[in-house]
Image (tube, rainbow, N blue to C red; front, top):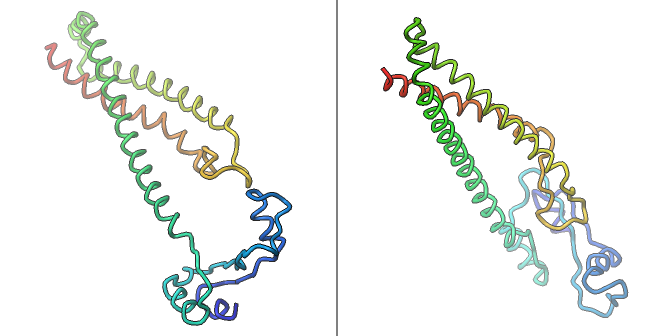
Length: 215
């Protein structure tokens, strides 16, 4: 304990009582565990401060001064979790790009079909003096509003599904509680805006190309 108190980065160190250690083992061995008859190591809780302590240096000091002590900073199981979280983040970013590409492709196909189906109407509009910009804006506005409305309904449905999911309390399992927290609820609100922006760009490009081909 004196060694830990002298270690930089350690805010406090506290030896767990026999009752606390028994409470930790109770879910596995039951409430009647004879803790005094078992070779259970004395657990010490360390609270870090600032950037934390130097784990490698502390292990060397423990080996030299307290050979029986073992330092467990959870690095062994935390490192693969951090790596998995990074891969999940990358997978999420790729999924968003794929969804945006699929939205752009669907809107482009729908705009091409609508423009081709209204070729005679477009020809009449041109005869009465309508410019390609005026015609394109009509189609862009229509598809952008439809994409905005559909994405809004989808975002509301997704947010509602997340709200209905059970929350993860202190006794819940590991990696539970799939939901947004605090200001992260802004992200579902951005989905309709981003979808409308993708639809606007895709429709504008498709309209200019098709109108050019119909000349």
